[in-house]
Image (cartoon, rainbow, N blue to C red; front, side, top):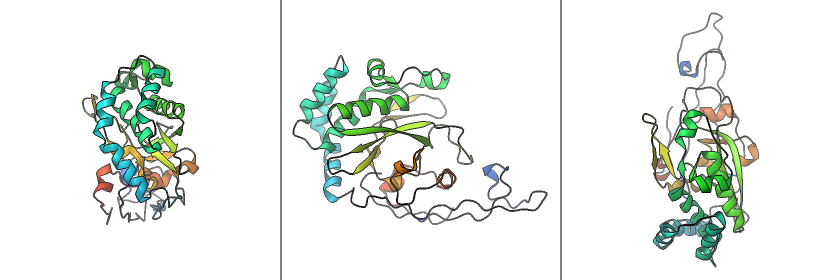
Length: 275
């Protein structure tokens, strides 16, 4: 989802029964009592990014070098900050004279190794304060807390970053669903010193929740660091269409029509040839 390329040619489903029928019936040929058909929203064929120059060869190289830097990981793993201020000092010391990508990665990696998803809060629907200080102190968060902490740490070391709210095809998502009741996720956009915008997904980049056991497993997923807009849109739809970072922003109906894919889909340059 970072600097890897892929060729996307989604196919378009052409007919639907009336709009009250669940999405799982989309490909059924049973007609309703009025024998009417309605057209499904077309799967967007153009998911090109608005910024064609964001992922230069240099940016891709710097991204991969930061991810592969074992010295960063070994150093960060030794940190035991007692406050956000102490953490910021450590980040500044390690990233001194480094490029912004390295600085953004150091924060991404620290969060992935030190913040766990708060499954108790999520499944009990008793989510506490998700500001940066609370997340740092508790070492637990849901997506709002992950993105709040990431933005706070970035901005403290002068890496411009803000939080994005929207609709994600994450835990509990049913590919047959036809709408979202409300926004359900938060992630980040950072603006680097080349004045280009990039997606960062600190929650999904830190681990996953098992759908059966509801147990959280820590796992660093670097694919979610500096994600391409044309990849991110498959599972992340911002409430503000400007934050899709696409030449032609898509609707929520079109978003739901996009196939459910995993990062390896883009890593291996796969191509969709049929529904």
